Picture 1 (cartoon, one colour):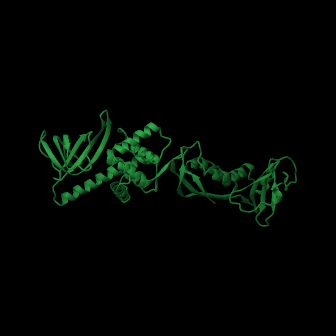
Picture 2 (cartoon, one colour):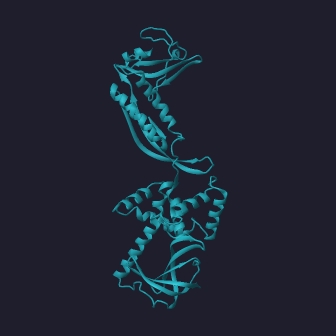
Picture 3 (cartoon, rainbow, N blue to C red):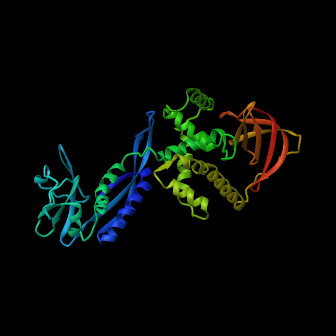
Length: 392
């Protein structure tokens, strides 16, 4: 039989399955357990927020058959009638006479108070018998009532495994493409900030996702602050630029060779349909990693075609004007004066410039005038650092 188990229940469930398997081995009964797949289902948390939860598909088989007799059910005798609990995998109908039968053992014919009896069936004749705990061993080659209890509890445990277990962590998942778009737009608007930096990209991107998806568990003041941050930079995960960049980066990483642990982990995460919240960090690192790879490829291409490479411009202290071809934010951090960002500017002259500022460059910027502060080199590319800039 196949069961769908809530991810957080697997560890607890597998411990019980191990005990059941040991019982089966002891009594010579077949028992198999195998994970056969996984799927994701949309759920709601206590605040009504939607998220995806992961379920593991498992197949479990096992039957207590010995000496032509098989254990089929346990009977709980109550004043209101008997409760019959069939063994997992048993699809036969239990005779009606056991619905209200007294706790008598049909093997030794003893009639005394028992809370539980057990029903066995002959696999050749089809005969049923209700037996007591002591006589059960005669039909199951010594299998104890404890072993039978394990069989009975198996089905209940698997069924209960469908539901979240309150003592376990409730892992939440997001569609991988949606998550990457939030990471992409965060990098585009604020640059990439590592885990040990101020407002790491992985936290900022996840918080912005929560704002857009009505996270009612978030404090109102904090949610309002995040929403103001997003509005201030026109945060838009549906823009053409964001969708194209995230899709290209995702397709690119899936085709890379697993040359190190980082690439292996990144590919494993990106190849899944959904991503867990706690893996947001490594996913967010894909965009800067992809952009660096593209820049390196472009640099190699320029060198092979003998094209002009970036070079230092002017002298320290010179005032220059650069016609902007393109620009991006490399990284950013918060200060008492607002968000400070480092811009990487590609000039139409083929040279690379950097500018650290709290002001920012608008999307329609055409030229920038500034004073040369330093000449630097990053990943083999010469860069001219400028300061005290004016954007036209």
